[in-house]
Image (cartoon, rainbow, N blue to C red; front, top):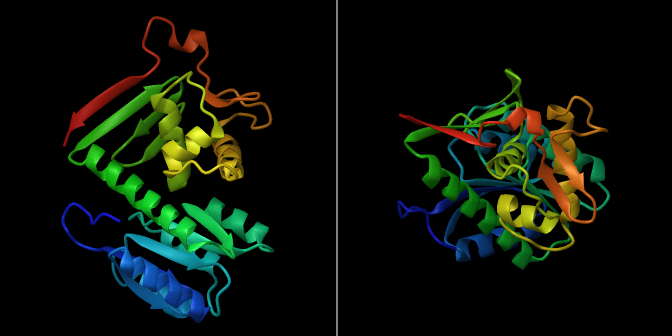
Length: 256
């Protein structure tokens, strides 16, 4: 795993009450040149989460004290963005959905393979670092149809109204807005937005698409913006009358 450009180690907080799992994660993350802090319950996890900036929080949802959902909710109330990778049990599908709704970036179901977890961690770091490199020192505004995205503030406006999106929902919409009319398969979206393209995780895309539609579509049951191309995937649909005589995508770069 590559270090950040400034040469510092990635700072990772692992909030996990099962000591064997916590130590295993610590060992492999340290081997990948991360600096790891462990928290064994929700109280300590909450304290550590706000004690300093983190490059990643690996968060078990079932914890003594405040649970993982409470910690995730508290972190997402803050303005500074920190990636969150949730760990869930097979029986906690509802908690997993709620965690994604609250803004977790990704999840793994126990039991999981260490190689897969490390692949997810690396993908999160690559995505965050790519975003930081691309937009440092500038503010780019993207406009397509009724949508307007600000890259610096990660803000979204639909027909002039602000839309509150989670970090991953924003990244997904940002990808569609940059490629209006282009069809993407679920695996392609996993690779472009999540940073990996493993088959079998297409349901992750489906759930994020559904939540994104619920926030930007007048009727999410009959989507007009993020449409399904049956047997292929999804695309951002822009009606011809909304884009006639002007480019589908308009990009405005503002100096900082």
